[in-house]
Image (cartoon, rainbow, N blue to C red; front, side):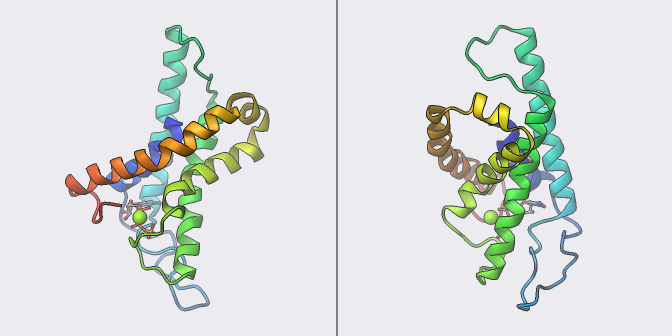
Length: 166
Ligand code: CTP
Ligand code: MG
């Protein structure tokens, strides 16, 4: 899951600048995505996830890692891209519900990346998804994701990279 987990903190660290919606509003008068979704964050975040995946592929071909699922360039690209597209789609609906940028939206804020990553895998490489993510692995992912999400955001807040600890 690292190729899906890395893009969000990478976007928080290196994002900023021109927002993806270019500051434009949706028909409801609210921002389409908001200032928290930028081109730089999207691109650097996805690249960081893919590079993480390439390192994982290299590690598993260099050292014997019994039992760890094998990544491919496609699987890590879909995980990284899906994670931030999920985050973007989440923000679209967050704005539609009238929630301002950076406010808390429990469940959605934590699982957007998992939903986006798995949805892209389902479309782009279903054989890899069903061959790798078994039910126990899926349950572990559901269990650790909100814990990791909370922990990284807390660290990001303490390091003053994030404005809020969620
Ligand atoms: N970020 C970015 N581009 C993205 C995603 C994130 O630049 N595509 C950066 C922004 O600086 C953002 C920070 O990472 O503020 C944290 O991301 P996130 O918590 O997803 O955004 P929020 O500011 O909380 O906005 P939202 O309410 O839309 O989730
Ligand atoms: Mg947020």
